[in-house]
Image (cartoon, rainbow, N blue to C red; front, side, top):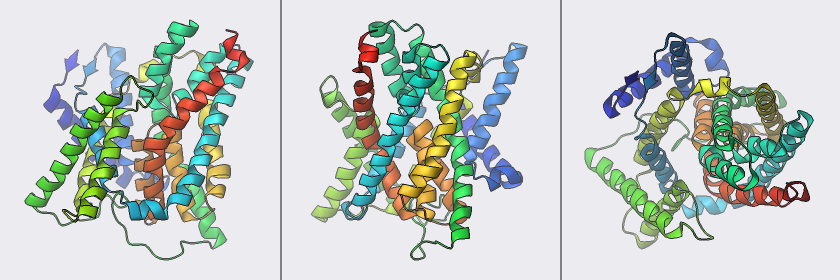
Length: 401
């Protein structure tokens, strides 16, 4: 057993990002299909660790940095959202939210239907639906415990974490190819963006941005305040009807902080620096998350359950191509939105952002996609998902169990 401490894990994550960048730069397939660099590097390391287990060699990472990095990323998302931009994207946010809600319903209907057809417990189908795919590891773990305690589903928590891991991997792999197909379709149809856009924020992570040490400290302070206040808010809401995940509270505080300071005229957020720190947090978070994936948990999945998850991935790709893309306008922005939808429809919002960055880094910026996806994927989807899951559990089909 090799245990890497905090510093060793940080070094490993940095090397994973450099490996991913090198792979994407040199492997035409990865570049052509817009595979995010953290996904490319992280999966290579995860598969190497899976191979080492056959020689009884185990590597353990210190993942204590993973949650703070994720929260810091969501804080920068909040600090990047001004009310003027949110007002402009209000209609698009509403439409995209309807599309996302449609996927939640489809995922659960597919999961229950396929589980029944494969001879599995219908609850396993719901577990392999929006609970873990659109919900992620946190939602999956919470509902897994509920399914075990209230419905008697054996090993529900373990199945939930394995399904969420599967979704995280596939979410980072299918978004790029889906976007590539759709962008080609946009170019072939002659429908382009209404006007050229200058890249900003998270759209071009490799763009150079001028910063100073003092401005860096200012932005770091804003992120720290968002983390502290968001954590306190989460503690106040815990156990109430308004309970939300910590990252949602942090994002909300970031939005309030950015716009409150702007209204008071006290401070103007330095967006370029926020995006730098956000991109660093996002990249390191994904690197740690993917390199520490326990792929052997996926290998241990029963074949019918694995088939159920594979079909869900296929449904996600088809939904993004035929529903998300068309409803959102069948243009370049819609193609980027579809890539993002694949990311959080199977995995998580950070995966969605990484998918979209891989697309915009190659084809050009999409302001509306980077406005809409973080708000829907990090805030609204958790609320809607809880409602959808409870609606399905209230069906006579489940109440009879």
